[in-house]
Length: 567
Ligand SMILES: Cc1cc2nc3c(=O)[nH]c(=O)nc-3n(C[C@H](O)[C@H](O)[C@H](O)COP(=O)(O)OP(=O)(O)OC[C@H]3O[C@@H](n4cnc5c(N)ncnc54)[C@H](O)[C@@H]3O)c2cc1C
Image 1 (tube, rainbow, N blue to C red):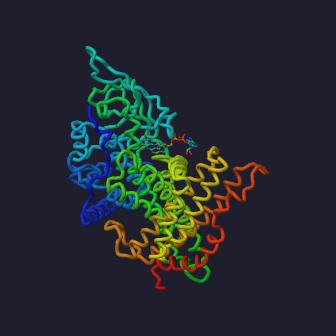
Image 2: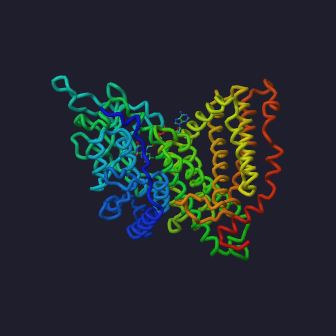
Image 3: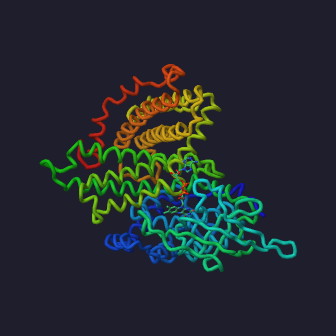
């Protein structure tokens, strides 16, 4: 017995910035060498997981990238959430399939990290850091995906002389990354006391995997169903030694793991967009390069760069909070959900736009963006779908709105207005309008009891995500202008550039919340039953409209920054 389920959390003290840079350089060099563009396209085409590369990346004698996730006490590098985000973004830029294979070891060892006894941690985390063993994470089942509570896999006690000596597991797992290659799999199964995690080694009698799934994308990642047919494991393979803690242990790490998937979305989105940026400087149409055409850049490039950087702002905000110790016991789950929703939707949209930006060439394999698009698509599905993210976000913030008698976002709007006074160029004023509009929409929903409509609740989740990302972007812009940038944040964009992007995003957020908030509030009310106008009187429509002034000039500036043009 141990109490680590109450106290355990992921995210170590963090690397020194110099060490992180060294790790990222080594990662780029290693993957660049192991996965040449030609090999990558072939593996994708042939639908093959490069197990040798996955194992070499995990081998501490070679790259040992997973050491970043393992605490120093168990032979790892004690990386924090910020380090993990940077590593995941870089891996995601190379190949989200390969990144998923590495991530699966982290995910598979998560229940151990947060819930295992010291002895179990030494044994399995030690094996990851010393031997580079590969893990898989077996939670999802054919009939239990978003709703894990519906899982059917059972673990029945094996008793000898009244003592539990082991468990017999029966059931099936679905869509398991590394499913057919992992050395160990953590399996969620229902014990008499409730869902619990078990470590099941490869080769255990009765434990088999299906053939790799034929997927839309992510084809360098092995995904397979797992079958457990009277699989017996000793009692010491029950993580934490106590039954019934499985769902809590799974939820404890969502803040952290969702930041990592958010970083895949960010990496995939930027990879595709950078390819489109390079292509549009070469491609001549209509008498000049596409990069000089506003109708092209302001639709296909600029808004996507802005949204990706908004997402990065929120990822960094969340990772930083986790590293400051606020991520324990699921405390950052809502923030992880916001980061994931924004980054993965932005990454997916950016990759789609990148195909369009390449015209017919984008539709062929050779130009790679269509592969990135297929790969990044998974990020809005696994580790919690976008809809589940919307629900998670809306439920939590709705409670905050109620508890604070409507003050939650009004107060945040006031703080942004203060930031606007000291930093008038970072979009904080427009972000304040977004928050103000959000507070008004939430209040209208309360008065008219509209969150009983699931669609309204989920749409609120999306609007909340935009408002909070606008806030994080304005704060990141102001920090960059003041020379207070996070020491591990990439420096591709200077303070002025970030401020400009933040202004564009905050305008979009305010406009979206004003328009769509009104749409769903009015749309949820039966025609003629209530007067909608007074309900929505608090939405600052005129100010939001006025705030759009200067939008095109700012987009021109963002395009100049992206294309390295002086302005
Ligand atoms: C390539 C790949 C790799 C994966 N790797 C792993 C892994 O390593 N380990 C693992 O355990 N799992 C893994 N998964 C599973 C993944 O996490 C699930 O697919 C995901 O959580 C969604 O579950 P589902 O597929 O059952 O969809 P469902 O839960 O059936 O959802 C279907 C749709 O309904 C929506 N929906 C669901 N519930 C609600 C609701 N209450 N209200 C409104 N809408 C709802 C969803 O948003 C979605 O759009 C992987 C999946 C894939 C495709």
